[in-house]
Length: 253
Ligand SMILES: Nc1ncnc2c1ncn2[C@@H]1O[C@H](COP(=O)(O)OP(=O)(O)OP(=O)(O)O)[C@@H](O)[C@H]1O
Ligand SMILES: [Mg+2]
Image (tube, rainbow, N blue to C red):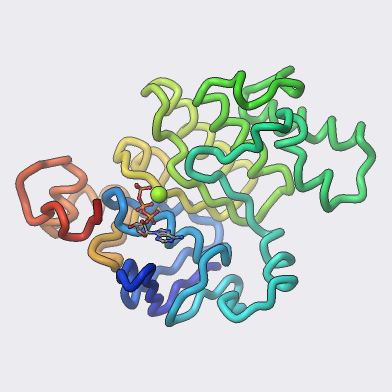
C-alpha cells in the first residue's frame, strides 16, 4: 500500500534519512518507534507528501507521489486521515468546525448532514455534545480524540497517527490505544502510528519498525521485536541507559 524506497532527506545540510526502505501492507497496523528527533514524523510526512524526498521514491498504491503536482497530491491525500503530533486543531474554530473541516471545505453536503457526520465521528471516539467548544477549553486527551475524529471524518483508507498518546495520562493513553486499534479493526484501514511509547506500540501494532540512525534497523511482529537480538532494538524497547545507543548517535537533540 505504501512503500518508501531508498528515501534520503536532509534539512539544512543535516542528513535525517538515508536510503530508508519501508513497506506498509494493505490493511495492517504498522508502528514506527525510535528516539526523539530520529525522523519519525519526517518519515510519516513523506507518506502523505507533506515532505518530499531528496532522493528515492514514495509509492502509494503504486503511484510515486514524490513527483505529483500539487492538485494531484491533494486528490491523493483524500485517501489519508492524519492525527498530527500535538493534534494541530485550529484554535479559532469550534470542535464542529475542526472535525468537519474537510467536509465544510470540499464536500457538497448540507450543514445538518455535516453536523450529523461530525456527531457520529465524535461518538466513535467517545466524545459527545462538545461540538460548540473551542480547543482552548479541552484537555490534552480530549484534543487528541478530537484530532482522531477529524482524521476519520472522510472515511480514509489510510490513517497516520503521530504520537497519539504523548502528553496524556496512562489511563487516557490506554483508552486512545484501544480506540486506535478498534478504529483500525472496524474501519478496515491501513494504519501507521508513530510513537516512542512501547506499551502503545505493543497494543496497536501488527508489525513494529524501529528507526535508528537514518534507517529502519528492525521490523517484525511485537513478539519478534520483543525477542530481537539486535542490541539497539533491545536497549530501546527496555529503555536502558546503558548500551549502544548514546546521545548524538541516531538521535539529534
Ligand atoms: N521542516 C523542517 N525543517 C528543518 N528541520 C526539520 C524539519 N522537520 C524536521 N526537521 C528536523 O529533522 C529531525 C527529525 O525530526 P522529526 O520531527 O521527524 O523527529 P521525530 O523522530 O518525530 O521526534 P519526536 O519523537 O521528538 O517527535 C529533527 O532534527 C528536526 O529538527
Ligand atoms: Mg515527531
